[in-house]
Image (cartoon, rainbow, N blue to C red; front, side, top):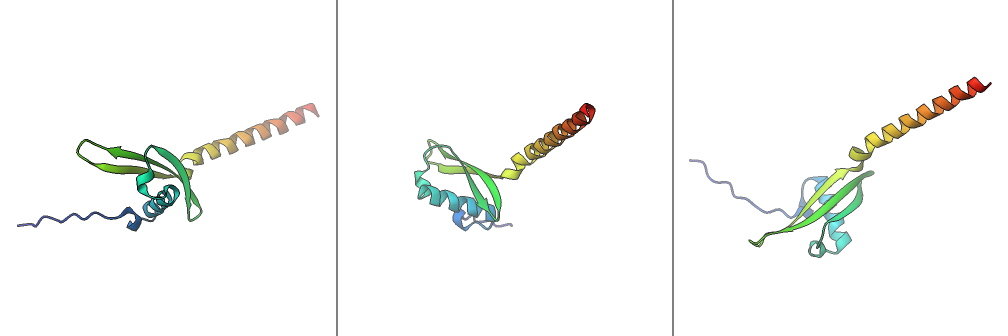
Length: 105
């Protein structure tokens, strides 16, 4: 008969996932502890030269649950496509200007 697995709470500051650990450390240091996060916050931090957006949201319920829900996303996931489109627009404008200057010559 299989035994039930014991669940164990892990401190987020000790997470084995580097981005989670770094985000938690950043939030802890930025606010002087997790208890001081009382409302939704949107921040930015760096890890290994990569910028991350992080949003943290306090959550509590009538049963006494008191959590912080946090999401960390690499900035490049959002800005990568925007940066590519900006470069493309630049090249198209540059090409059009060069083409137009030849017409005037």
